[in-house]
Image (cartoon, rainbow, N blue to C red; front, side, top):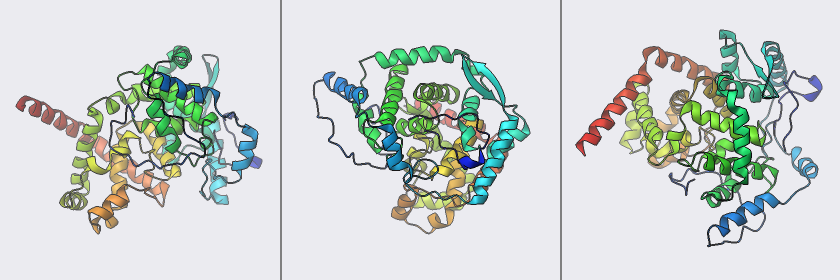
Length: 405
């Protein structure tokens, strides 16, 4: 489901009018929001694979709701992004979005790829600046796809991925159906697309996650991936969402974020601690004094790419805009600036208060200022080559630790 910000009467230049209807959790508890299904749960079946087949049958058959009726029931209660909450927007913001969408329409180029209309963009300083200012919501689908495929360069084999996805959907054997099914109801349950149990949105989410668990069997499924896939599905139809997820894993080596041992996650904790020590030394010392290190509170930040209820959705979209532009490393800077934003409150807190703050939804008051700060700090860190230095230090420490075993 893609909801365009601009007033329909303003006729903004959107690219198109589209509509759409953990391995056994290996990580620590990511404190995902819990949603209580309004229908009886699946009857437990202890005999595998009958249990998994029963789960798949629930999604295949579904509740088959009247989609029009469902939309009419919930649409008036949703915010601009489809959530059952209030994300206010002023007339000025609405007009600004329309103006920016017009600029993106003038900037976009059109081509046909695998019999599908796609857009690409000249990657200039102006393009980069506009991404940092926030991609207009009705252009996010095209821009995210363009960026995660390295400017469409890695999209050459997407037709084969479509065939692969169709084949994976037909497979019956999966060790992860049960865990995926458990996690889906507590993922973005306040969004109109995923509210209906076994409805169209939840079915698409189940299909994408299940297919990916069969596509990358070493990763399989891990808690946190549900939130990522759900965010993608808000902008892409099911098949394309699977393709985008694959591109994200390939481009940013997310494979090593989720495999047993979580090598990228462990490296992320080390990098975050080093950046925190250098740029926010008072906060670094305080958190260490109360026994709160990055591995305790930031697991869900990285394992969900900040989609796991870390920030408000409007802030998340801005983070994802620059993530698609820059890659995974920008998330270290996002984490640092997020800590800087709440530094005063954290410095006054004990362990319990800091854990509560860092484990809740952290509201950023000014997205523009937040992202501008991330950009300035990221440019400085990049210029100094600091991330590469820290990463080499982590690798050196890992080698020495292995040799000492």
